[in-house]
Amino acid sequence: MSVTLKFCGAAETVTGSCYLLTYPGGQCLIDCGMFQGSKTLKELNYDPFPFNPEEIDFVLLTHAHIDHSGLVPKLIKQGFEGPVYTTAATRDLLSYMLPDSGYIHEREVERLNQRNLQRGREAVQPIYTRHDGEMALESFRAVQYEKWTELPGGMRARFWNAGHILGAASIELEVKDNDASGGMLRLLFSGDIGSEYKMFHPDPDAPEQWDYVFCETTYGDRVRERLTPDARRQELAAEVRDTMSAKGVLLIPAFAVERTQELLADLSILSKSGQIPSVPIFLDSPLAIRATRVFGAHADELEDFTDGGNLMTNPNIHFTETVDQSKAIHMYSSGVIIMAASGMCDAGRIRHHLKKYLPAATTTLLLVGYQAPATLGSLLAKGVKSVRIQGEDVKVRARIKQLDIYSGHADHDGLIDWVSARLPITKGIFLTHGEKPAIQVFRDDLIGLGIEVEKILIPQLDDEIDLSHGKWIESTKSAKRKIAQTNIGKTDWHNDLAQFSLDLRDALDAAADEKRRAVILRRVQRALAEDG
Image (cartoon, rainbow, N blue to C red; front, side, top):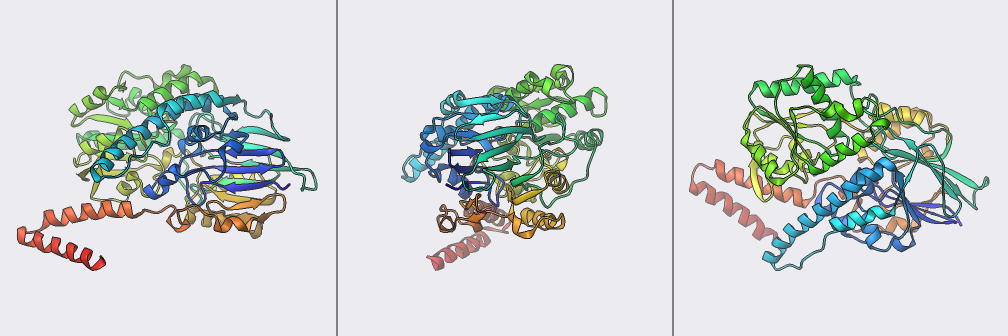
């Protein structure tokens, strides 16, 4: 029996990371992540898995981000009964993140079903609930970095620090292969690789000399300016000072895990040293607050996290856990910093702050992380003049700024360095977890690194390969899920409709009089009639 691998997610997109590995001793998953981005892409989360969950023996998780872990509760609901192996820190983070994810699904479906009732449509069920997220944690088994874990069916795994977020790992596998001349295959799954000068973590690590490597390419086409921690803080300080001098509000959509803790640490240092004004700093995210406490519990594993986590305690920093506390922030019209999840503005409390503060020209919206295509964050980054939030049109007059200096992902050069340190790779390197342009640029530079063209492989969603013989399994090429590969990583008709609605409203508002508005509406109606 050959060893085969199926790409069930993160193929020419940065979300939904999931690999199905089938080998003589059984089946396992490496990651089981949620799709994020456009509504078309997110609909895949409601579809059946492209495998039978009851046949999966175990799961290996690289880290806690929801695009790598978020469908584990669904997997368990649908019959998976095995263990989930990951680091202790990842398990502790997910003890909050998975129930929070389930709660978000419940709320989203509740709102959707209210609209469905009005439209005469059937009610839908959430992907999973808060309770499902809580129960999933019973399946988790903690492993240590750099120590072998023996697994069923002649496989063993070793986790290496990936330098991405607390608990993140690259996973090394040795797989028994009856068809291989040496009897074993050596595989390395990068997970997400951290950037140089990453706060809290050492540089990514893993051994060299592999049969196959599966490498993320999130920033495979981007080279960042390499900044020391102090230089990074100075850029943040400049944004704070500019906003406060304009008597404005600094609004930061932040990912609850890692990005929030780095920002809190830097803001605390800048505030205590007098490099920014002494203003209230609100962390308005229950999940981020709980994640911050996990960081404190694992302080002995972290760098630059001095005094058991006291670096992030500051009398100006206020944790707002309740809804009433969150609403009370809106008493401020200036002189305040607000951090709230989610980092891509697609869910969480950040959205009600966006509704409040985007129309003000004195507001600065500071985007500090990757914005997946078709997310609200990506639309704001492109400079749209209005957006639709929670069913309402919102004018965008705020200043939109991006700081890529807090990215948890290695850039192009960092990824090249990481791959170089893993050489030689004898059979193939798969480029995953990236948009198509990033993958193509990175592929070309791997060729320049001396890796043979035929060994650089770019899978599509649901592709499957026979790793024992290095051949694609052609029958899977036509067995794709309902989303077309051309739609991955792009906006969809839902986004186009929302933008058209905003553009139409702008045109009507700008019309000189009622007669002109009637002309505009007739033209739209005529276009609809012609199409019908």
